Length: 349
Length: 281
Picture 1: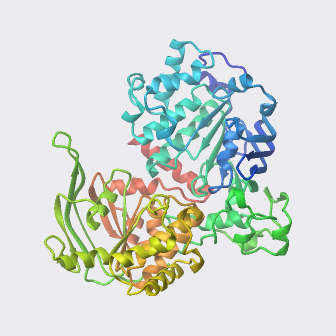
Picture 2 (picture 1 turned 180 degrees about the vertical axis):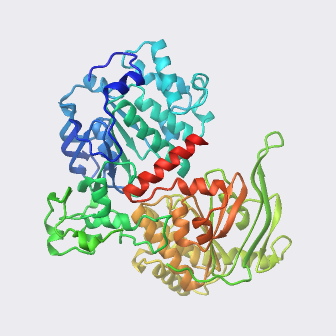
Picture 3 (picture 1 turned 135 degrees about the vertical axis):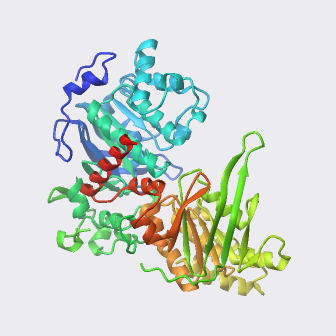
């Protein structure tokens, strides 16, 4: 899509078809990641954090990437933007057909913020405490050559759209003058002010209270409708994204273990890890015991062989410890498991 | 899980607790006339958003903060003006588990030293062997092997660290366990482990538990009673079933409405409803 500077939300709105709620959108992918591998050097040699991960995001699509600590989800987010110079990244990261891994530093810089926006968990550390809110939001436009007055106008417009009262005046405020929820709105404004094709939000609501969490999710949601971007929302909480995501990808120990459309994945989880995550989410709408997953999440430096989940898995058999399960299609989902659950076993939740 | 029925006489009775921070020019009333009681073997949840005063309330009760007004009765006896022995007994009988197991365990102490420290302070173990036996016993209660005794906190995951913190609290045989967001730093799959462990300990040892959390869904699974705080004031309290199924206060309702449901269609409907409620507000 070609864009002119200063194109506003309203005119964009007309060129992007808004999908009806629940409708499966399958336009061309804005992001196609295949066989992504990321490793970091350690004193004991390189450690592979992400070991062959695939991800596809279409325009206007909301994809949830779910994984626990050490699963490699945040490393994936950083690798997509090539943010870590220490990391060794291989595979393919196609953004609108261009492989980001083949680009020069300057070509990559031209895309960060402009084509891909990134929003991180902790607004306390993401924002620079000694610079005004305005200068930090404007920076995302200024580095891409937008003039000062124009950058200011669009920054105010974006902050206003995100529900920051008296936005023009608050541009001169500093981060400490904002509450946590307001700071997270500023981070969202920085990520989307240049109208990127893709927003990567890494645990954007984890530090927030439930009501603010709800508001931030709704804001991201409405932005998808308004500017037609694709979203990758990264979270450790499968409970959070049921009503948000179109598709869900579950990651464990650096690999995708299950991905599929949101309804199928919640109704009939196939991978025992997905089912375990669902059963350990406390629900406010019903009583009943929580069913935790035994053990602790696998740590990157000491991942078990075969299926990395096998030491925690009640269905594990001998082959799980030795043979790495390849993803295969079951129903509408791709599942990497030797002994997946059948629909009857899981039953309706 | 069906919680065991709490008995009538409160073990912990808090009346009119008030705490103000800041100077005379800009006083911030963090806790404003908060009263509650916890019976032996009962589990009370205190919920609210950040800044609601829930943690400050807890810290005032255990004596980590000095309240400006109000009193705490332990076993029917006021703590203020109590003799040394009563206050000593209170500090032994009321134990705390903190939010962040990465900062609440001394990185330079072994597991045995961490869990056994309370036994030394309260002279609860006559010999070195008795001390070690007790440490191994409580570690067993929380599902850790005796082989961890000589290890340091850094070699444990978050969930295991929180188990060590719980073992430390249980070592001196308390009657009340006070937990400040004990699982909010943990992964979801491990959260459920620790919540079930707390429930198990409560039932096996007949503990009273005060559980501070911002996650109302967790409170529903763990607690008998719940107290909802906003801006330092208790806006609603009562048995969990009543408060969750028929909330009386608007604040409680808005908190409940914001909690995601892990079912795509129902959560979509809930979010649409919450959004329209916000627009009309």
